[in-house]
Length: 255
Image (cartoon, rainbow, N blue to C red):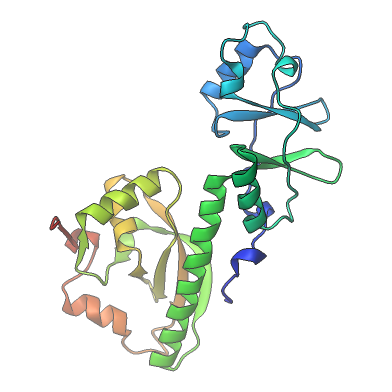
């Protein structure tokens, strides 16, 4: 796995595709109701029947406006849009310069494909950082055990994780809990060693998932065969530390 450079990451890989949109003749009252239950970062793209983007309406645009007014009377017609091949870096800069809460992502015909927000930019940066960690971990394992190490992306059962770290810190655990609740937590890094799943990186995130009763989380899994490596160093460290499950990890409240 080769680390991904940030400028090589494209909007299409991280944009939200399950996007609600308003129509120009929708009543303001109906759009307010839609926004109340939506996750479109406080606004909606406005599209015609062919999903061509015509404008944008934010929550602030609907203040002190008659409930029966059509959205086209208050929507912003000058807006910045991006394509799925736009780099995440350029899209993040466009959000900053334009002041829009999100960018509609459109095809060459101007049809809505999804939206890209600051939160999506953060997720892409997290993924880039994690992939670099995975590559370093893979290289370390291959050099230590003189064997090839495969890498896959999958979700893992939190209850099956064997930790390699004896304690976590309470303040960082709270931070990881917040990130997990808001979909911003980076994937774990684990080693599949036969039937065992050894946790390498992400102990605070794993403990946060356990606290939130999240059964499975995303992870990069590095695979090592017990037939080729008699005793995995990480597994030996866990055994010597008396670590069989996340319940064995202490939470340090030291400030």
